Length: 96
Image (tube, rainbow, N blue to C red):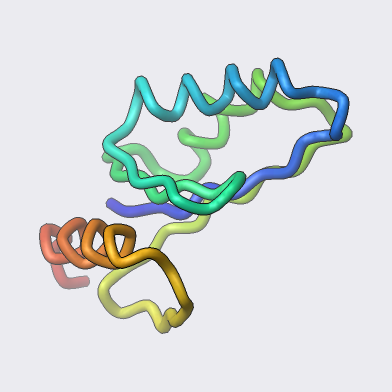
């Protein structure tokens, strides 16, 4: 499954942001080209991904995990390699 993970940390918390990003990079297949936003592949659901990443956050931080499917309506302006990664990842998704 493909997810968009986006987050915002308090400006004075760069250490926790780096820890979160290391956790994402070491745990998931991913693409990253926009600050604080990752595309990831995981067999976990959104709640499980959130639970895995939540220890790096405080109540002053924000995070959102959203599943992207082939049926999703999305549009934007991204680096070509992110579109390619997303299209290839979604092509591996079963139709539901």
